[in-house]
Length: 342
Ligand code: NAD
Ligand code: DAU
Image (cartoon, rainbow, N blue to C red; front, side, top):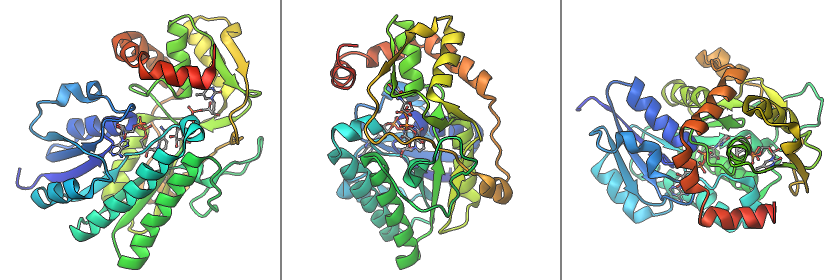
């Protein structure tokens, strides 16, 4: 393993991070992965169970804010790149309580950046989001580009924007090698059933209704998680230091369109869709211009939306034990707080 590429993934037990770990272990022949994950409510050992005993993979049970532990880990295991997925990721939870978002997304990123600097880690990839750009008007033909101003609206988005600024500051101030990606909404297997698509699929399979916020006309730009992680690896290897890369599939759908597409796949009547009170500060529309990563690195999305959505529904049908285990206990409390008696 002397020549193996050594990668520190943070948040690798979550939705996108676990897809990254699977992608690397399956496609990069010489790789060693250290996964730093605090195993919050969103982390799940089941997501990487198949690789538990793979000698190329190890999990460190720690928070990205735990400077002392990670200092030791990096002293013993120098890495070529850190890819930071670890975050509190759900907008509705950030509206209920912003504190954990600041702790992990802002302070955690600052600790990691400092560790990358003191251990001379050659590259730091910050996995950010299009939500830092704020909201676009409905029906517009304008998109977010890498030079769009940052006008985050939710506590989640504000915490991710703060982390992006800390990354850019590390590049400018200390000359650290930092790259940032900003991706649109992901969907696919292993997504925690608090997010729109897996919430609706699993509620549908349980015979429950689908809480659609407001008028259902808010637009999101959906990308399959496998297209996201392929883009991330390209940026990790070939992205230019100090640069930002948007990632998106030009696949804008209103929430009602997504709900109706899911109802069709699941053979459910549209009456399952239940309008509820709107999310506070609900961003109207996200749309990503990803020309830069296409031109500079040759990335294109590969997964067709209709096929990707059908496959995702099938995955949840085939992995009932995975989501049923999640949708008990602490999840029920959150559900009750968020949706009341629904
Ligand atoms: P997720 O909530 O499914 O997973 C988050 C993971 O991070 C979990 O395994 C959790 O245990 C871990 N974690 C949380 N706090 C931690 C801490 N302090 N230290 C170590 N680990 C911690 O999230 P996701 O949807 O996979 O998102 C991953 C990243 O991608 C986030 O940074 C998010 O902002 C970004 N992102 C997500 C999307 C999307 O559509 N889901 C789109 C663009 C960007
Ligand atoms: O754009 C990237 C972002 O996408 C990521 O940075 C976030 O981590 C990720 O959670 C996601 O944020 P959204 O807020 O867009 O995703 P969510 O699945 O929560 O909601 C998608 C849309 O569906 C949004 O307009 C709100 C709406 N919605 C959501 C839920 C959970 C509903 O109408 N009903 C619901 O119950």
